[in-house]
Amino acid sequence: MGKQKRRIPAEETPRPATAEEFGDALLAAAYETARGVRGAAGKSANRLAPDLELPAEAAEGARRAGRQLIARACRGGWLPEDLDQAARRRVDEFARSFVLDTLAAYSEPSASDQLDEVGAVRWWAESEPHLPQWAAKHILTPAEALTSVIEALGFLTTLPPLGSAPPRRPLHHGVDEKKLSRVRALLAKAESSSFPDEAEALSAKAQELMTRYAFDRVLVEAGEAAPDAPASRRIWLDTPYVDAKSLLVHVVAKANRCRAVFDARWDFVTVVGDEDDLAAVALLTTSLLVQATRAMIADPAGRDRAFRKSFLVSYATRVGERLEKAAAATLTAAADPDRLLPVLASHELRVNAAFTTLFPQVVGKSVTVRSDEGWHAGRSAADRARLSGKP
Image 1 (cartoon, rainbow, N blue to C red):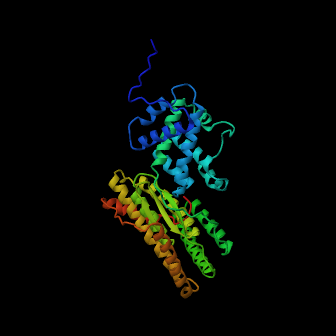
Image 2: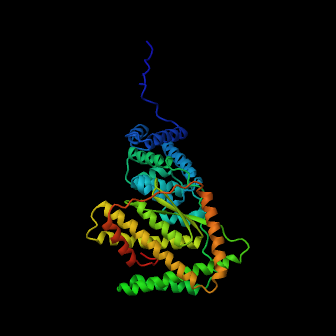
Image 3: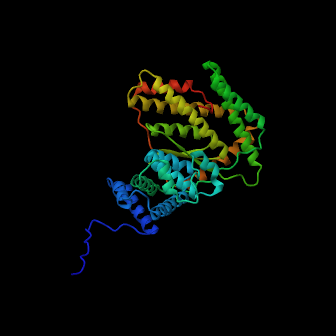
């Protein structure tokens, strides 16, 4: 009598045997997880790693799958900072750690500065597979490790193309460094002052000098045969009230000769402009968001969502008015406004052209204000805000 063959139930699939098969199985589980199939990551992990050790083929399969998806994300315009910020919002610490390790393994040495900023470093021994070392570092069982891997891969499959992100270039050095040193000194003194009136005066003077510096810079660039093309930078916002916070980024960008667009799917604002102006926008936005949040929380009336959102919208609106007024006053006081105006107009055309190329279709959206009390409190707080570059 011959041996009976074990019948495999229809829902059971053979365990992968090769690294390529493991990689395909991990990707399939990742796509199921991304579609929201409940428990897909854990069930697949238990099937792929039922033993107490991770198969070498599983480690290699995870490496291949991760590299494939990271490469696709980078080609789609996702920078290391963007990947880290998105992972913080969508997956747990273990899956985020695997994303950063995969990024570190994939990226070229030339990107080391950006990788260091997000903590993506090659800490593991290159002579051994990464996955077992990573699992041991986080004290994860094989099934737990593969669950996190699948969740990380599932996250990477959801990343849409963002468009090319021009590399960040060094700031210009054609303007007197003494002016920049003076700006930094004023900002530092304003932030450390315990007297509101003094801090306000110092911050206003610093803002004036920063605008003058920007005007001097565009005049220097006007004499160049081929000015640098505008760059872009993404500013990530923390929940809640991201739409109101994005308005603050918009008004700061506008006052600093930039254009901004908000992506509500991922909670970031892309700002387009000259590299020096982008740095100023990021610095000032960070400072103002900290000040706005502190003032909003401290207000005794600010307990409900309607108040807080209205507060932030009003705050952003008033800050925009202040920044525009400061820029206009600086332009009026410029030594050679007749020469400066056409240069600024040319600069605006270049920024608008670059913005339209990156975002050919942009839809305007309004932000609703439902609390008069919050609106007035936010406007008052904006009048007290320090227009400086440090939180």
